[in-house]
Image (tube, rainbow, N blue to C red; front, top):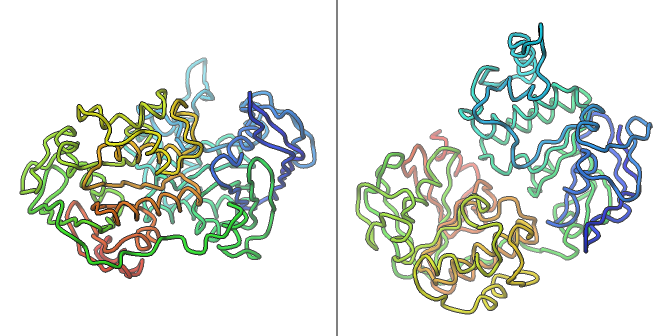
Amino acid sequence: MLRMTGICKSFPGARVLTDVDLDVERGEVHALIGENGAGKSTLMKILAGVHTPDEGTIALDGRTVSFKHPTDAQRAGVAIIYQELTLLPERTVAENVFLGREPKRRGLVDRKAMEATTAELLEGLGEVSFGPRDLVRRLSVAQQQVVEIVKALSVDARIVVMDEPTAALAESEVELLYRLVRRLSERGVAVLYISHRLREIFELADRVTVLKDGAKVTTRPIGELTTAELVRLMVGRELTDYYPPRATEPAGDVLLSVRGGGNATLDGIDLELRAGEIVGLAGLQGAGRTELAKALFGAEPFTRGEMTPRRPRSVRDGIAAGIGLVTEDRKAEGLALHQSVRDNALLAARARGGPAGTSVLDLLRRVRLAPPRPETEVQYLSGGNQQKVVLAKWLTVAPKVLLFDEPTRGVDVGAKAAIHELVRELAEDGMAVLMISSELPELIGMSDRIVVLRDGRIAGHLPADSSEEAVMHLAAGS
């Protein structure tokens, strides 16, 4: 169905793609993987008509095509679902599906026809719990992903590109997306699937193409590869163990304690975080994981209960108490994207009203930012390097307790391993760490013990070597 041949692309000062070939068959789920900066997004934007290749050809069904604009690609049956969804929250599902292509009747928008067609598309996907008249802002992230898929089907897309489609989904919502991807495949739609989560690649993909440094490494049937081989192809080295060894010394003093903590979304929270320990926080979407991190930090404070050190009533209180929060959404809440690496690294120190505890350059080297250029604007860094800048920001104030909310979301396996090592090093240096992750293997691999939340309350505590099934039983209340 699709053949891209000899694709080259350069931007000022950088060659991004070099002689990349990619072919995709009808009804195939074809995974496209590689580290951040490997060229995946650029290749897909060329396919979607966002960028024009410097060299190379694109053929659909054996016919050479040239896309000068995204609408050209859309008319040819190519749809791309970006990691950051492009929906209008204050409009209905039907209005979003037909945005800019509204059916007309006597010069006016034919709302009835628009909603009827949207309803048919939703029904065709099955297991959808919302309708064409629902406002998008009232939908979960997983449901909004479904709307994006329906948008693609509404233009009769033959090739659907999904860029990190599960990055913002909880574990319980991922299976819905899997079913939708398989349904698209059964209908003969070719799916190009970009993900850093290797388990998804092995569960969904028929073939996989690996990119590294803007060049194609290989295309192979997924059945011919192991996880270790795939990692080696992506990063160019062996990652014999995804996670650093757990703590061998017993946990130290209690650095943070909550008794009976609660607010509008949390109730009866009893929790202790100790020096040298990584505590994993598990739970389904909506269980209150992020809300708990923000309550401990003072962003959405507890309104009842006891906390040691004293209960923070604001972010400044949290920083003053020696607590840091690496937020789930680094772009919206963790960074000033148009400011330099140096300015971002100093944000927490300036909020505290004092100087940084160590030099910015030393911190950037410690978090393994490559290359450590303090004057670079953060918006130009990869996702993994942006996350390292967020971490450097907190290390400037040397917190006693560091809360990580989805610290490796949207970063490649190489950067993920570096962040894991950093988190373990911080614990070994005597910091108390609370780590939230929707990836259960990561949570189990990194944690010294696990706390499970359900409906804003602690459902139970589990040891480090617990199974994914044990975590899910507590999280789901089964």
